[in-house]
Image (cartoon, rainbow, N blue to C red; front, side, top):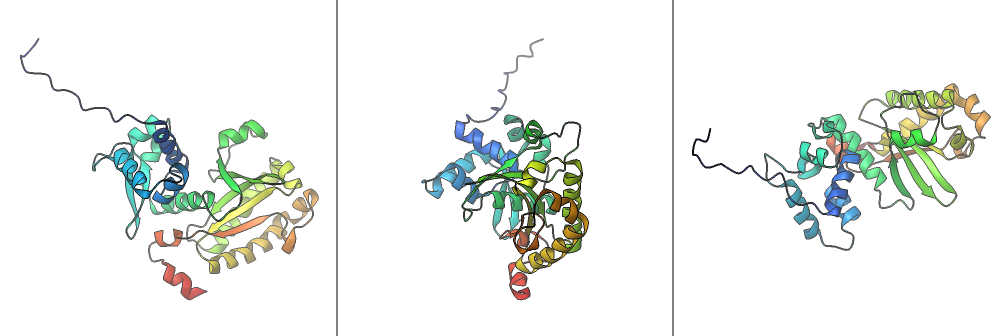
Length: 270
């Protein structure tokens, strides 16, 4: 029955998204977050910062009801950008990516994002999803770890990397975690072709150089103890006596995300 009251129009579902907007949102979905600097590098090469600011304002809209992206405080005046529920739905990403970020999630996602988009690295890196790995390796029926795999393009071919992130815990815990994952890979022979060719890299992303040295010492010792013989059957030792290629990378800025940590502390401990 018509009450005679004028009908109110529903608010618009959103804004018209360009192809670049869609790719930008998909990028944020892949990494869980992104930063102004990475977005500028990936999608606005050769353009001024104002172009990035304009796009982010349009995709975010005004709080508290954001459109496709929301700014999330990181530390100091720095923010990262995260998908909203609408943003995740738009690019077919998991709705869980729109949930509030805890400290551990911020550390994990920022470390991986900055490592993959390290402008100082001469090799191109890209994240490889578990679904894509299942297309090329005998992984069907097996549960893969949530940690990130990546490909690094080099002149001699692609390297497959596996990332373990230091969330600020004791180095012994990080070492045991990394060796446990590798033991699983070696036992199940998932990546033997890459291990035989020396193109499987274990990558530890850590907070500072002091921590990196402690991790390296414990990691080499435990790797030789637990996996020395199995890995020696696949490949001869690498420079420095490592049984496989290992990279321990300090990711700038991540230490500042942790409560009670700071770059000044990092400098004093060197």
